[in-house]
Image (cartoon, rainbow, N blue to C red; front, side, top):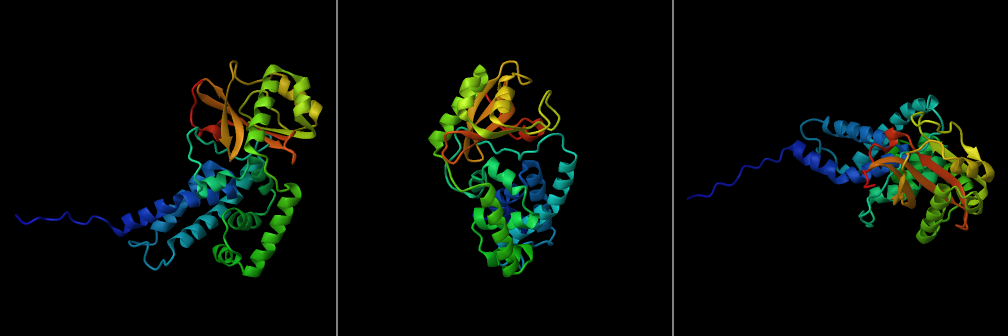
Length: 309
């Protein structure tokens, strides 16, 4: 009997889909770090996919470097999306913080584009919000993902000289507001656990020891949590009183320690549903808390895994 081989079913669109899937992690990392929003990132990836497949029946034809092509399309979609994000911010209720990326307990420690995005701390993403869209794109591509200036120039349609100028301005701005340092993970974990114990126990004295004198607390609830603050709270005394006031929150809070954007942090659960994410920003010495970031807007927590209370 003559063996009949199965007909080849790979179409040009199938091949293009495979290429897109292969690069999706990289695209997610770049776009998320540019926008700070998981929902907007997913929308941009959808737009990128549509642009990729709209090239006709054979999307790969004429594309010598699919990775470079996809990154260019995604970055430019993200730049356009930035305008819509900024408009939403104008009517946002209370402080705005980026959507957190929370790692599963068994998450791999392997290095990859998405993990490089996760290593951009929540505090750093807040600083990046103060850059212009082009400055941020250049900073993200160059400082986080290691693209050379010449390649960035092709991605954003600017000259290498313009990219160098954008990169210089972005680095100066970021480093002025965020000196480079990284506390040891053990120090971060201990500081987070001590902070949570003091806040839950209403121990103002302990909190006063943990908080830096110029600490600031941001609570992003988007107007969707009762009694959430509408402005950042500055100063150790005010932040300590805020944290021990017991206002709002679940009746039976359950805390779980997780890595959030690469840092040891804590997630508050109401039953098995995520209620808030707490991220601390430490002083350069690592012994005091200078920033408290609480993301409690349920829309920003919808992508988080559920927990066991």
